[in-house]
Length: 360
Ligand SMILES: C[S@@+](CC[C@H](N)C(=O)[O-])C[C@H]1O[C@@H](n2cnc3c(N)ncnc32)[C@H](O)[C@@H]1O
Image (cartoon, rainbow, N blue to C red):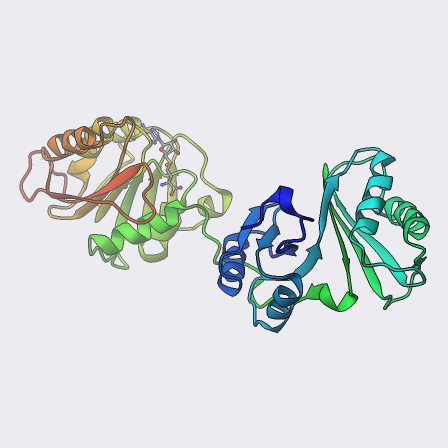
């Protein structure tokens, strides 16, 4: 696979590719599928990728031009990489790089276009003018402003790196984007936590009835609460931190801005609840104790979900400790590592049928 330093070695090809911000992983997969063995490197701006392939440039361009792509917007073949300076000192080197590509011949017309990302003491226009003048001198070509010159000189600047491409205009591809956004309008999850609670509800076969009341401990910013509120009549969200404004505004979400222990001591917190969830980022033993303290507010045999955070590397010890403490008030405690669990696992359980102190 071609590496940065090898751009300009004459082997393979390199391309600056633009893609919708946030869809870079999908674009990278798409590009690698089209050009097996190709590599991609992130560029220092969202939605920008450097594509490197051992495939010959003309062949790769033809392939990319013909392919039905979903996430690829613009493809610029680049043949040189040079240093871009914050001042104009880099202009002659960029012109020399463009001339060194060896495509512009005496009398041929070319157009210089620059896309600048970063902070520089010059504008793209300054570079275009200076490089065009220098290129005329170096190649005896004719700098032009024609829409269709013989050569399009593209300078793609990312702060201190300038990628230079001299191409036939037809080889600079503009492709139709079929997917511009990761999520449909209104579907963007508040955070990864929203996936976790959906996965946990499915994994433990928990259905939330329309009349259900849910107690959610460690609720902020409110990903779980928002998902739970889609189905439940009421979600009591307990967290000393602020809820996201959109979640706080949901008519069936009530925020108790305090710790779980403080909530347990408040008379306004009354059961019965049909489900208790807990995603507090505390030691699993502490979370389990909070669940047990509040268990009397949960209906007998009602389900509960708690994430077990691996606060140390002793994962099994954390699970055992959580199980031991939860067993005081819950039964059928099961652990599942869900796709959106990173440094944690999720416990599903049922409130014991007969326990002292139930308030329902
Ligand atoms: C991982 S975040 C929860 C994310 C949440 N489930 C969501 O979907 O947005 C953990 C939360 O636990 C809260 N927390 C930590 N200790 C707590 C306690 N003793 N009582 C209540 N909340 C607590 C933190 O303030 C933090 O907001």
